[in-house]
Structure formats: structure tokens, C-alpha cells
Length: 440
Image 1 (tube, one colour):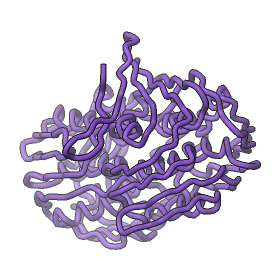
Image 2 (image 1 turned 180 degrees about the vertical axis):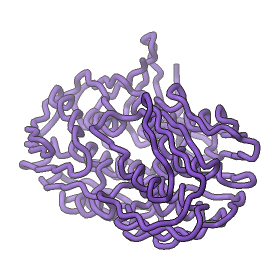
Image 3 (image 1 turned 60 degrees about the horizontal axis):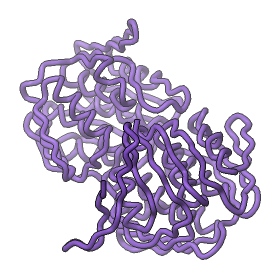
Image 4 (image 1 turned 30 degrees about the horizontal axis):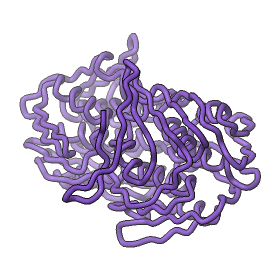
């Protein structure tokens, strides 16, 4: 298994381009199966979750061409497979979107329970509730979710809890159903809006995305289209936090500043300077961060996916901070790892009480999930000495070329392969400006 070695204490400075949104892309790629022609989707992050998903769609019979620059062409006209087996879906959680897509496309679907990060119980009861309200029968047999319907008919569906996955899955199932489907208490996250916009570009009729009531007027057919994914809110937030953690001066580009308002407010509260442009945000850290209290909430509240990175930053804040995780349980495993580095935190159920220290020290740590891995990278960047992070495959699922981007900002990182061979990165001058390049 590969590892990352970080030699901390370097102040990050410069500009970093943000990739397309992972959480939008993993729903939009399956949604392209509903089109009667080719969909060309650009600004994809070239990460493990996307390459795995492209392989799944290909194995199911779709024609998929994914290039290294983040553009995919998908044509599912000849696809006739409605089953996604465990060996296909075990590596990613978002494979459950295949349920809504295949149910809409074929009137039936069989998908094994998905894999992904171990960050607590992630039930799909709201997904099932939505499918049943549309007229589908749902059975769970030996770890396989089976859904089928002779006809899908629009209905009003009230979600008992705000669920991004259920909101998107119901939209996918309802987009070609008869009549109108109304989703009440819908999730409002930017990637929910992006999926709705993609479906509308194909000819769907969806209104209200971004509010808590979404109406889906069923259509008979969807056509191919060209579409660009929105920027990744969580990747942008990770680099903004990294700037604050290292006393840096970093501008994240190709972002939507409105999506970052909850994080921006907290960074300002911590004493950072945050400057917004039309499509970029600059974070200038001129002092030790002040303590803050954070409560994660569905959008537009503070995102749960940034809780782990910012709680790493709070480990060096001046004072005691309180973080309350209201979305997922079991999302403080990274704090056990950061304690090896000198971090001080007391975990009580969903609450972390973090006592800031002046400095962390490098240590061997393990990434237990995607965002925990990002938190450990931030901890390593601001720690003294060398931090070695194991199980980096979690990080590779969601961050495109993270060590290259960080080296371009001044970090000192190397990737170590399973044979113990280190791949150093250094800056080179090219016609495109400074870029990081691997030196074996």
C-alpha cells in the first residue's frame, strides 16, 4: 500500500486550480445512462471514484470513453444490463445512484449494497421510501437491493431527514415517471442543483433544486448533451484550511464563492483574512487561529465533509474549540491519529472538545476514510518533522493530484510505493508556469 510522507513546517503560498465536484460527478455519470444519445461531460476530477465508476458503467454495457483531462463520453443506447454486482460496487458508496437510474431506464434494478468510507451508519431507507412512493417494489435479498415497477407514477414524497443521496436518487427515478413528483424536505447542496441542471440539459423538467421542495415533471425521453461539472466545494475548502493551518497565502481558483460562505465565515472568525473575487478566494493567515465552535449542518450550513479538515486546524488554535457533528456519527477517527502528533481532544458521542496546542509533531498515522485523510495531510503540513500517512487510497478517491498541487504551493511531500521507493516532487518551469513534477 502506498504512503505519503510530509515534511511539515512549510508555509503554503500561491494559486491552486480546483477540480470538478466529486459528489456531483458520481451522480451525473450514472444519470447519463438515461440519455438516448451521447453525453459529453467535462471538468471531471480524475480521481479513483470516477475511474471506478467509469469501469462499472463500461462493465454494464455502456460505451464509455474517459480521458486524462477530465472529459467523458457516455452512450448507453445498446446497454441492457440492470444488475450491478458486489465486485463492481464494493469500492464506492455512490453506486447506489445506479438504483434510481436503472429503475428509470429499465423498470428494474439489482444493486449490491455499496461500499465507500466507514464513517458510521448510512441507511438508504429514504431512498427506498421514495422508490416505493413512485410505485416500485423493493426487496433486500442476500446483500442485494432489488427494485422493480411496471409503471412509475409521480407522487409527493416527504423525506424524514434531509438526505442528499435520497434527494438525487428520487430525482433520477422520477425524471421519466408519469406525472409530477414532489420531494419535500429535499437537500439543497450545490451538487443536488448540479445534477438537476444536468438532467434539465438533457430535456428533463425539474424545478426548485436548491430549495427544500423539488418538483419533477416526468418526460418521455432524454437526449444527449454537453455539460461541465461545477467546482468541488470540499476540495476548495481543504486548500483554504491548509492555507490557514500553515500561516500561508493561497488563492483557490475556478470556484463558486457562494458555495464556500459557511467556511469563509469560520475562517474570518478565526482571524484569517479572506478575499473573494468572481471565481476565486484568497486566504491570508497572518496569525495563530483563534478558537471557534462549529456545528455541521446540511447546506447552507457548515459541511460535514469539511469537519475533519477544520478540526485538524483547530488542534493548533488558541483556546478550546467545540465541534458538533450533526450529520454522521463515527466521524472523529482522525482525532485518534492526530493525538499521536500531540493533538488534544476529548470525544463525547458527536462532540469533540479540542484544546489547541502551539505545535504538532510529525508521526506515523493512518487515513481511515477520505476526509480523515485530508485532515491528516493538513496536520502533517503544520507539524514539525515528518508525518507518514498510510492507506492513502482513501485520499486518492476524492482529491485529484493532491501532492502535486500542494508541492506547487510550497509543500514538501513524497509518495512511497508498496516497495518502499519514494517519488519526490519538485517544481519545474514550463510554458504553463510553475508545476510539480515527479522525480524518482
